[in-house]
Length: 301
Ligand code: C5P
Image (cartoon, rainbow, N blue to C red):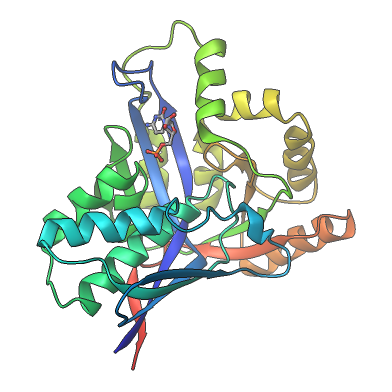
């Protein structure tokens, strides 16, 4: 039996960050949206454990952590331990989500692996246990399981679905170099020594989602990590300016960056913004939409 599970990248429509907790993590109030840039994880039966990765031309395969270190190895070990079985499978990841791009690509791989191995090993893990194991793997992993549009609290791992009947069009401008999430959070702390322990709420943004109006949504997009990301990578503010000049309703750094995302009024408008970036020499520019489903089986043979 072979299963392929697809899991989506995320955009944070609102990333409200509070002062660091005692465990070093930051309390968040975030609104996630899953978008149609996805990684596929394929698993099949094997006597041992192996992990392979394929990447598109534009991605540097050396940036993918090697076997033993990859979040997919950890996902397999945790799921196997939970059921008291051996973590054996042949696994391959087909990546499309930028590595260290602020779109939770590693988290998507972990979520996809959990769903795929649960099927392969026929262990029938409950949703509750799957979400708990996902949270142990990383703050964004539960959302990659859930997909859609959702509010994230805690350190981002407590997720609750938000009704979102619209289709939102995005352009994602991928940076050739990744950024370290911990470094961006550390710089946030330097810039905000008096941050409140309570992260800022997303009430206006949630109302805009409910209305389904892209102009309203654009007005309330917010990323508290953006200033820190700009400081560490000053070129990103030029990217945002270019997209907004070229007709995007609003540009925003995605999560901890460096991917920049641009909300557009329609698919045609998004393609125009993307063409403007390509004309300016940006090599990897993707048009996508959200919300899309969380980790789900796409093929099994
Ligand atoms: O949970 P995850 O492994 O994705 O987090 C990666 C790093 O990002 C953490 O080690 C921490 O430095 C930072 N982080 C944080 N607060 C959060 C989420 C992540 O400080 N809520």
